Length: 243
Image 1 (tube, helix red, strand yellow):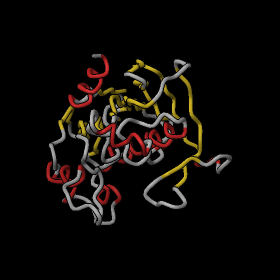
Image 2: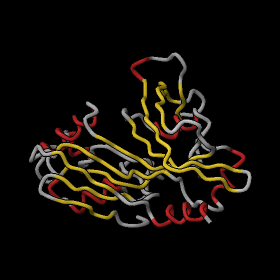
Image 3: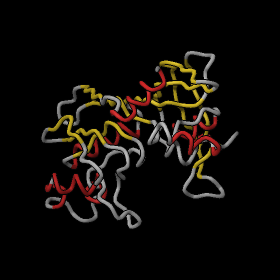
């Protein structure tokens, strides 16, 4: 693993971490390096001792939700079956609050808005996703965006956004921002082909960070909130745009 996750909070039910960029969350045959799931399995041995091999909780390794490999930020992992089921239902029923920070290409006239577009797997590339106009409403994805700050650098414009997804589709934020013609800086999949490599000269990774997570604690039933500061490499990018 490139760098260890930072533990933000831990009790008998769950572990809240700050996931580093460049680390895959779920184990898979195609993934050779250590994942968040395998790291958590080593840390929380209960995952392999008390449950049957058919248990979804065991198969998922306590991973309730995930972040893209190149995305950093706050995540919650379940230590018990009860915590897993309760947290999973909150994500499925949209009872969590998730907020992200992203730096995107271009400027905005409006201070905030909502994107509501169905997302499907790309018909020509199974590793990508795309929007589908007039598509199946069951695949609709909803993202609220808000401009935090805008920057002008020579002839280019950039905007720092706060993003709040109200659904949890794969690559949702990245796909929605590409749909708006405001792709995330240094996005190798959904970025502008002409500028992606140029982005990497001043922004070393995808500028997408999960900064805030709110949900109901599975054991105490209290509403809890966790935050993750912008990583230093992304903070330096923002600073470079000011000077």
